Image (tube, rainbow, N blue to C red; front, side, top):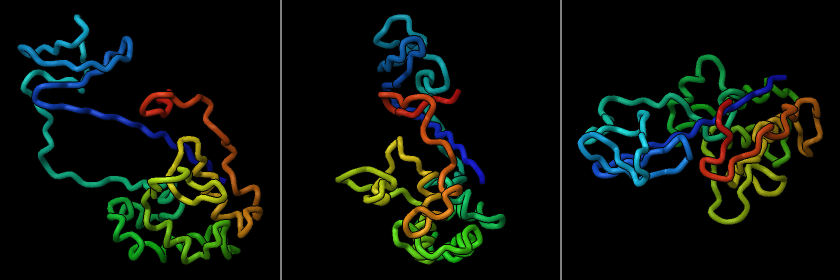
Amino acid sequence: MKTFKYITLFAAITTSLLFVQCKDEDDNVIINATCSDGILNGNETGIDCGGTACLPCGEVLDFSGTYIQEDQMGRPGINTVFGSTGFKDAFNVTVPSEMQAAFQSKFQTNLLTLNAGYTTNALGLNAEVFTTVLSNDVLWLAQTGITTYFNGTEILTGRALSDDVIDVSLLLIFGGPDGTENPTLTSDGVPANDVAFSSTFPYMVGPF
């Protein structure tokens, strides 16, 4: 039984010619600061913005060069579980519109290797249909209704922070048609965070 641990890091840097948003680490206040002679002068006198997010006057971020995609994680753990040596890297750099044609059959082979007795899962999906859904590694989002990865009724309408996506994935792989098969394989044993989510963006608990 493997336990997967994911740490999601969020970072946002906003720059323009006239204004820079900076974070004052002392009191977590976001201030609008303007440049004057290379010094960032904010709404709060004496605040030293500091850090790489705050650039000297006239300096702009350089986005020139060639960039390549390094990772694909629409749904946590999909490539970790279904990707194999030889195509994990290829999967990470494939655009979603091309994923199903390239990887569905490989995912199906690996699904049946993980669970040779797989017939259908709690969503009623057979191996071919299930891996067709999984191989298109994007996070769906319903614009109305409940946002949930899977709550027993709604299916992949988004992802709430408290959704246990690893348990959902394990349940759909090993739980069988009614979700009760292989009970020792349908949970990673981590039911919730040990620290509460933040009430402000980005809501995730910081690394510690």
